[in-house]
Length: 191
Image (cartoon, rainbow, N blue to C red; front, side):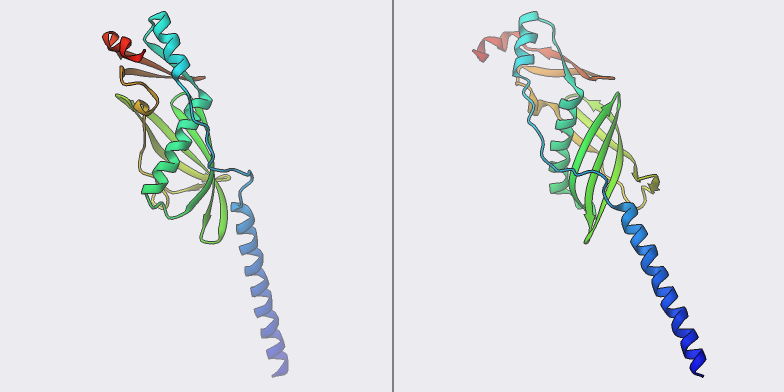
């Protein structure tokens, strides 16, 4: 009888140790690999607008970093109005044509995680729309049925004066080209 208790205790101890190892490996696997925050830089389009007015070319190019900073700012705005089920504590956006990748850090309860979110960008007038396509934690795909963000909208009008209206958005390898309709008669009101 004593042998059975010892054998049962060893099996229980072995199972407990196996569970601890599996949970520890899972926590290690989802732990963020980069230190990220939610700080962003405001973008200033005044110089680009003035250059556009001087050349009378109704277009402007925003580089990858400017688009990434706009995306980060609007992710923060999105998170303040949507419950996504996790706390996002940091993000870094990288643009490649119509695709936007966001490396994010967050917490699910007390457990930290790092993930990659892929977005497809489209435009509708003066709105830039980031549609969430997939999420990965390292190489593991997270099904959209478990985690999916609603489209994130970026109002380009927030970065532009009232005299310009976005006519067309072209996604480039190195950023985004905006073509405008301009009310040229309103320009003297800028001075």
